[in-house]
Length: 139
Image (cartoon, rainbow, N blue to C red):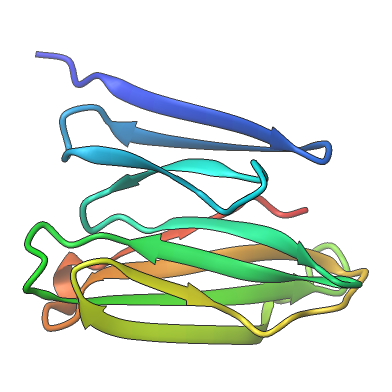
């Protein structure tokens, strides 16, 4: 049996982001960051990650849902920058939330002209082996 893939593509301010998940992985809901800026599929124990404009900069945002609202859930979001092609990615801002059920984290505002991406790790707070990391493409 071939696995089906659910895909979501969103274009915001000229930036296109895409996510692909196994269609049978888990129940999913649609989340939005407000003002129609971003919509993404939030699957159980899989982080949804994006950036939002904030004044003269931007923030990294991530959220994750637990299969059971009573379980501790962790989400960590990082903004990483790269000064030039081939240089190492450096984490310049991060935020972590641990709570029961649904968790959301937002980094402090970052102002940069460097290449950047936002990465998030999320899942059960008490079982690191089940956590998943997702990143936006560099922009």
